[in-house]
Image 1 (spheres, one colour):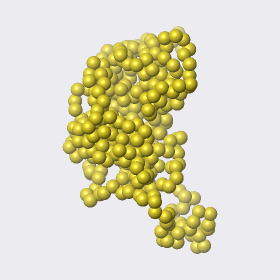
Image 2 (cartoon, helix red, strand yellow):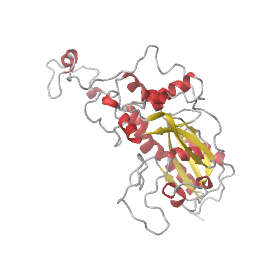
Image 3 (cartoon, one colour):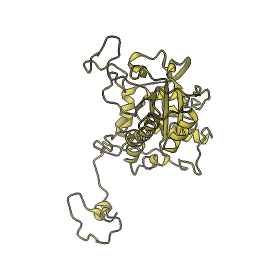
Length: 343
C-alpha cells in the first residue's frame, strides 16, 4: 500500500557505498554493544535504547585549507570551511540523506551532527556542569548526553588515537571530522576495531603546540571495547588557548577576536602541532593512503610568530594603496579588477 516502507534489508556495503556517494570520505559501522562500559553521561544507548548499530562518517579536511595559516596570510578558511561548515553544513546534509534512505526502509535513525550545546558534561574540560539540567526519571543520565565522536570513530574501526589525542585515520591522518547515526537496523557485517599503527610517537605534536597543551611524558590510558588505548595527557584549557594563538598570542596575527563564520571563530593557530606537524610527518613517512603530488611544507619554512607587545603599525605602501577604513582613496579606479564590487 502507498506510504508503506520498502521491505528490504540494507547491507553494510550498500550503506557505505551510499555514504561515500553523497559526501562521506570514510565510513565505519559497529554494533551498539561496543559502548558497553561507557559512562552513563557518554553512552548513546540512553539516547536511543532501541538502536542496534552505529554508522560513523568521516569527512576529510582539505589540506589546502591549512595553507593560508601556514603562510600567515589568510585565516578564515580553516576554522570556517575546514571546521565549522564541515560540522554544521556538509556533515548534516550527508546525515539527512542517509537518514532518509534508512527511514524509507522502515528503520528509525538518530542522526548526530558534530555540535555541542546543552551537554551536561563540558566537552572541553570533561567536568560536570552543575545547575544546567535535571533528571527526567530516576536511572537516566542528565540531559544532554555527550557522545565522544573520536571514541565512536575508534569503535567503528576508522583508525586510532594519536599521542595528541587527535584521531588518526589511515587515509587522512588527523585531517578528518566525524558525524554519526544510530539506527535500529542490524547489518550483515560490522567493522573490526582498527589494529594498525599510524602514530609513531614522534611527539612533534607536543613540540609544535602553541598552547603547550600536550605532555611529552605523561599519558592517559583507557580501555575501550576491551582494547587499551593511550594518548598524551592533555591540558584542555591550554589547548583552548592554543587555538586562539597560544602563548603571548604569538601564533595569531590578530589583535582582537577573530570574526566568526558559521558561529565559529577559533582555531586561527591552525592546529600547528596536532594537525599540521602531525600531517606533515605522516606524509613524509608515507604513512597515509591518500597522497599528494607535492609536499605541504616548503624547504626553508620557519614558523612565523607575532610580537603583540610592539606598537601597531600599518606599512606605508598599504595606506598608499588602499587608504584607511572610513576614508576614500583620491584616485580610486572604476576599472579596479580586484574590487569586491566586480566579483
